[in-house]
Image (cartoon, rainbow, N blue to C red; front, side, top):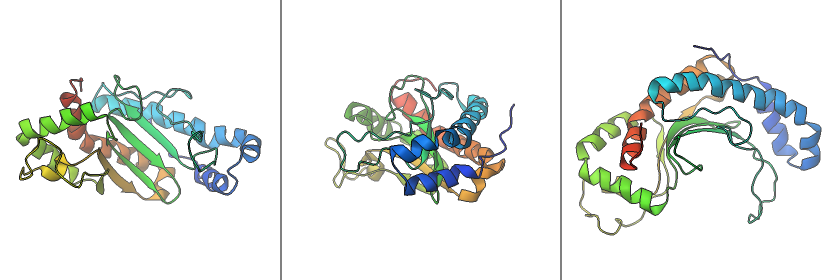
Length: 227
């Protein structure tokens, strides 16, 4: 199994500089730096993480391709946004399910941003039919959901908005009503920013993915997908 020494210190320096110069002229002048300090090490990370991910599940992809792979594009979609900054000021990697077509598919996730590094996994704002399948599975398989909850304690928080009232058709007194109100099921573990330059970072990521695996399996099964 391959090793990963950690990301270069210039990765965060680049992102900080980008946040102060978020325009096409500056980015074009620093494209080589972006490739060397961000793209290439992230691709290496994805390859090594893929080997470790295979031990957890072979149904989730670690794709190092620059376009259409696990690393999100740095270009922002500004067509309908008031915020016209052309570039993202963070690096995101999603190891999504092989059946997934978008960021709303179930997947493991790594987020790199100065002062905001986290790892985890789940499903973010899935379509209503998918959300209904997950809720139904919680109601029909309370023992399995209880086991998922136990592993959630490893994480800093469960991310995502919740409905203010119980979803239609579900008992307001159900013991898992707060989970049934969720519109996303995403587990997030915060990591110290200084760790990303060290070999321990990929080990921490692997541990987080292993603890997120019961949720990922539950969601996959609810959707009729392999795990």
